[in-house]
Image (cartoon, rainbow over all chains, first blue to last red; front, side):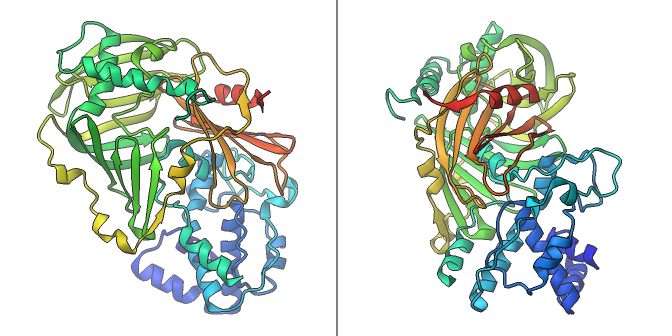
Length: 171
Length: 328
């Protein structure tokens, strides 16, 4: 099930699969927590604090307990930092949208957000089964730098002007 | 461009490019390799062409449609991504309008470092020849056109070898390959279909989204930032041949503080040096990655984090990162 949520966030599901995953993703408290948790991880990997997410209180406890999964995808190859960043980028837009909706819907308390990467490397880096070497996450978000350097837009990454403005107002 | 500022050094190339273009038009195939290189450079801007090219960099592949038109000395270009989420870039000389229909955003930017195939050059042929041996290679038949390979062998290990296939009639580069240090192809641009020299209607270089943008968000911040500032940072020991194009301060999504960016190029390869506060969590380890021609190296430096990213070998990125300091 959590694999479905992950795939959904990464935009890998289509049509019926996506519908099913969407229906299932928030069907019970456990799955709802997983949904929030994955988004928080995605945001934290980019160094972006999802402050506007209206999360269940115990998400952060779970987040602390959860190791950083550096390559939660099946097609793990010579996983470089760049590829990790590129894979993570797919969920960025989703985080933005969820954050925005959250800030519209209620009065989100500013939540202190633990950054996943702030853990010591020994705790936080737990490579998924893979035969190749995995470069430890540097907590440097390369994707924006790649776009800034090449000036060629990444479809996954646009300056989220739409999302930051309402969030600021809601506070 | 600020005269007499720190930016002047790199930007001095630009007028040379323009001057070079004025006297090189349609003179037939040049006799030497440098002439071929210069003509290829001019053709990317002066010729009219439309087509689709495939860009492969490491594991990443993208297909892009390009329409290019030159009227009265002004370049008009439209670039459209054919796979993945839709985006479109409409460019008039260095002014870029980036349309993101999914985000209903149009981003205004100024071309500083954008590498839009077949326009891969950032300095005149003579400047490139200071870092690469330029030779002529064999003839090849590509998409119904004859093209001659221009072979660029770097003088040192600080940049990658480059191969450009320049169409014999116009000089336009129809295929470009960057080789790794072991000689394998690590990045490639190649046209999959191309109409060259034919009449390109003016309407074809107009945005297909332009009529809809009234409801869209306009983000002009990148264009403002592209004007450049004095960041106070410098690279003391640059690899031979690299010169500063510009330096700017950027606001990037997900980063609370503006980031300083210094852009260097040897005329073909380019690199950006990013300097940001080494905030919470403070990084203590160096990290790096290589994918295709894209290399990345990050190095914590006291209260700052220095990141070098570019189409360069890792050794170059490391050397540059090691010599970043405050400008005296």
